[in-house]
Image (cartoon, rainbow, N blue to C red; front, top):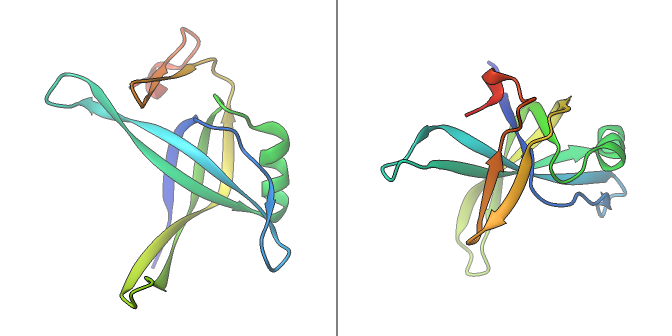
Length: 130
């Protein structure tokens, strides 16, 4: 059995190093990933993810990555049963990063009308453009 995900996207918000209740350091990477096809309006949509990064890797991310950085992430999906205040159970999923790749592309990330828009630069490799 194998549990993993791979994403390439743009960090769309600032990253902050935090400490969990047990003392472990972590960051939560806000990642936007453009879809590789147009919707019915002829526009590209995007998906938004929050990826958890722990301990030494979290230090590396907080020191070197910033809003607008293009990164690749390989990690695992972790499920966890939780309960709502009204005692209903549900299964929540967390994306946990295990490997990171930094792409030094100079894409622009802009927000308009409540949406994030990613514009590839001329330096962005063709296979990474949507």
